[in-house]
Length: 419
Image (tube, rainbow, N blue to C red; front, side, top):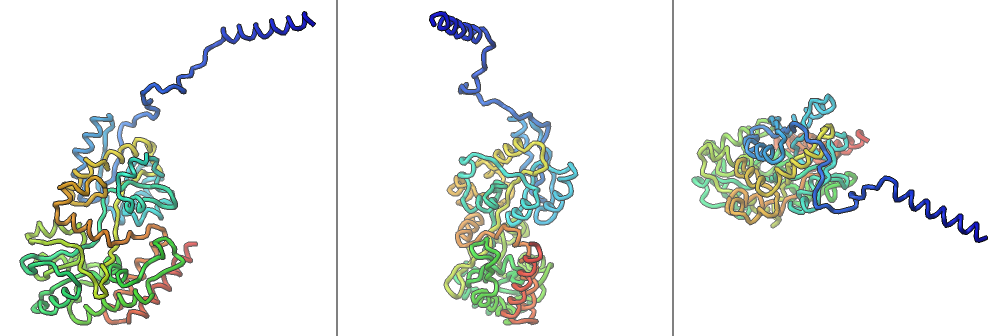
């Protein structure tokens, strides 16, 4: 027994000796060295697609990023609203696309479903630096697909030489227009045959696209409120307060022409128009939209433009770092100063650059009453039927209820066809 015990103890001792003599394990991974290891190789460059006529600000910011990180930023302009998405569909799979694109948020759901965008992995400190609605707009199916670049919503813009102060109510605007509209001049103009703008009236009267913005089974575009809103729109055309030339695709250019020529005292338009109007020599005033006859605010659509990483990018982590860099408070403020597009960074709300800017202040105020455009893919089935419906109403070819019923029927059929 003693001999067996002795042999056992010797075996244990030998194992200990062999273990001590063996190769040592590297436990450095368990220790906090205080240094952040760079695990992703740096690319030579990142390719960025910015919106048309909006890339000037990138010259400075790209140079700053290159200086800080040693990565060249190559950027080009691609029209954002329609061409950006279509070009990504072609160039992404071909391997000739960008690392980073910019898109309106209502396209995010569809593009994400198509597999064109990469989910973003960022710290909560990053997302918390933006307004919650703007982050929600960049989120689809619980996943973050972009960081906000700017937000926009239509506001009330007036010529201070023709209208001394902004009216408080749409009833006041209507009365002004009745007196002012003659000899080719108009008191107020709006593209209400375009659903993007018409939603403000329809929504303010009680209509809605999808229940809670994400339930395509519940469409509120032909409910009682939607009909009342469309009847109000119809009234302006019936009473001759809007010219026939501002209907359809050329309506925007016609309206802008009348306003810049001093033939329209006020318009409903978005922040993209501020600079062109000012450059044309119009002394503009800008406020949130006047309240509706029912006492409610005009419930405009709010759009959020965002930065996104292509799912085809081979440099997703560095592309994400660039997104964080260009959307930080300093660079977002710089971009606003160069483009006049209002950022959604919380820290900039009280910055004099935003707070003391009449246009930015109006957009911020109107955004309180606005609703983000739904970003679910089903939204793509809404635009065309609603545009055609509204155009039949404003041209006197159909009454509001019948036109809206027809539109909703088409929308439901379109949604069903995609399932």
